[in-house]
Length: 343
Image: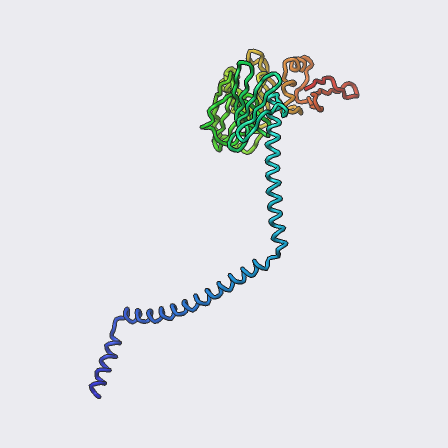
């Protein structure tokens, strides 16, 4: 018995002398066992809860009113039909507008499928409109007598324009302007203006990295238009950029006969050019004339300028009335219109 006590004492003593790491590890093992048991129990509870929630969801779906589901499905079908009808209507509008430009009519249509439309007029003129994979008109071939011409069809605001075939591979971005002789593409830091002359495209790239008003449509249009005009007319480029060093962002409008630009923070200037692109006069304003820009071609025409000079009038006092520009003056005790020109 004493030996057993000694063994017990030695054993307890030895246990008390075990390293702390072993004791901590043993304690952690017991705690882990408890945690694992709790986790297992919780998982069982959550699994049961998930099954219950899933069953409730199914019950909720099953209990969803049938008439409400039918109404939703009907609404989806109706909206889908409306969208399809709207797109078809747009396509028809484009075709009608294109027919107008091509001088053909619906009665001239002799064949149509997913790939093309074919028109034949009473005079024997044949027009073939090829469509792209989306069904949009893409190219037009016109056969008249022995002549055959092919044009690229492009639409802007549903209005069709016909251009010579050109390489569009490297062109990207949004088309922001189009007329009979040009297409403008806008990217983040650059715009590309495609100019057509003698059936040949010319690609003008304009950097926009330093242009601060890119979100201002009017300012952007003016900036690109100024680039285009100065690119096409070397004499104007020399007068405005090389001789005067006028910043392009300060130009308000350039035409072959004049250029209006912001001179300082408080003044504006107009440079007037003759038919040889030579500067023959210029004026400074404290404010721009109360005439819309479409009226400036008349306001700054040579005849009006000479009349203004001869009578010592001021451009600042001109104003616009509907489709006319007017100059009013005090005569005695009354104010009278002394000049009125149609725009």
